[in-house]
Length: 92
Image 1 (cartoon, rainbow, N blue to C red):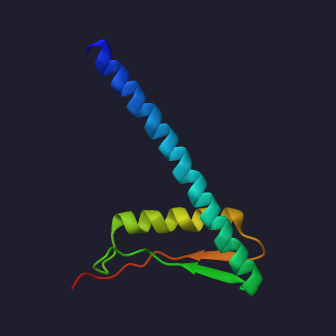
Image 2 (image 1 turned 135 degrees about the horizontal axis):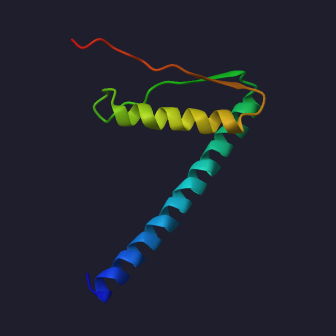
């Protein structure tokens, strides 16, 4: 690998690191906004189901995003509990 290739790789990795940090902060801000809305509405329990894809089917990625969102919501929760139940459906 030549110097140009190495520099390109370093720039790509630096950009990816910054993009990851931006996404993380955007997710935290969204979770905080949801927490404020839940707190203002005086809801005591928040249920987070598995997310579905655009066709309405459950997917591994949807389960991952739902679990991640529920964990972030639980960490930032203010006087409410987060209920996370993984939905398992039998194939037809």
